[in-house]
Image (cartoon, rainbow, N blue to C red):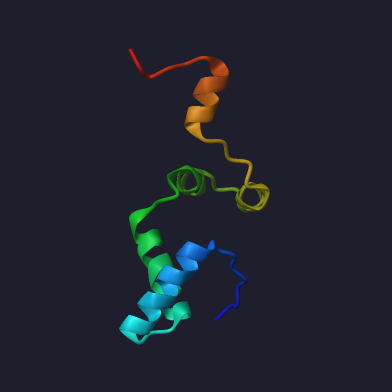
Length: 85
C-alpha cells in the first residue's frame, strides 16, 4: 500500500467522518472504496487509445509522464468549432 496526503474541505470531511462512525469503518477504508468505484465508472479513453495504438514503449512512457492531454471541448473552443447547431 501507498500512503497519500489528502486535503478536503471541512464539509466533506465531516460527512466522511460521520459515515465512518456510522458504518464502523475507517475513513481510509471509505476513501479506498470510493476511489475503486470512481475508477469503475470512469475511463481514460484518450490515454487508453494511445496505449492501444502505439507500439513504441518510449513514446508511451513520454506521453504518460508529460500528461499533456487537453480536453476535446477546450480544443473545439480554441478552434472555434461547435457541436451545437
